[in-house]
Amino acid sequence: MSMLDPVQLSQKVLSSLGRVRARTWLILGGAALAVLGLMVWAGIALLSWLWAQAPQLAVTGRQWAGEAMTQVEEVAPGLKNEVVKWLPGAGEVTPERDVSGSDPGPVDRFPGLVRSRFVRDESLIEATYVGRADFDAVLTHYVQGFAGGGFTQEVLAAAAEEERHQFVGASGRFEVRIGRRPGGVVEVGVRQVLQ
Image (cartoon, rainbow, N blue to C red):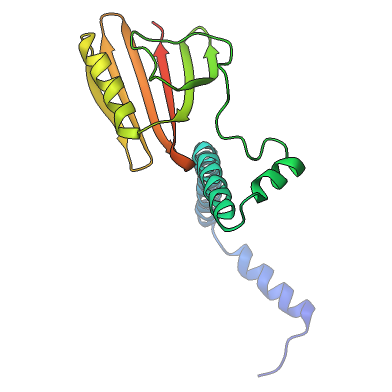
């Protein structure tokens, strides 16, 4: 076999490609577009999933940081105060007083919890509370409080670190989120969905 020079090789390839029917080129082009479309769709789906995971990743990061700070404090007492000097806010676990706002819902907040966040817009009223408390006692307080007010309960999600419940009654729909945080801290979110 003799070696073809580059010019002869390119002429041979072009003449072979010229014999391919137009229908074949259309099929190949359509297949390439379909593959490209699937790749774009997969990229968008992946970014959407990552965007949805961001809040949970933030919560997990806070939990890890809190647990790490607790372990450091056990190993080296007083180090936490030094860290707070260099990084203000790093040692804060719970606020000392309520932020502005009001408490949504017919159930009074669990005693000892402090309102740390409040949001109100056209579609909802939401308050978040934090404080040191027993997780099971807090959960029982809200479940019994809403049940006593004639609300029906539905568990939306439950895990060792957090539970979400929905309560529906004559006065509306409420979503309650109760989570464990490092150091015996409980975080409660009460959301009233406005009609």
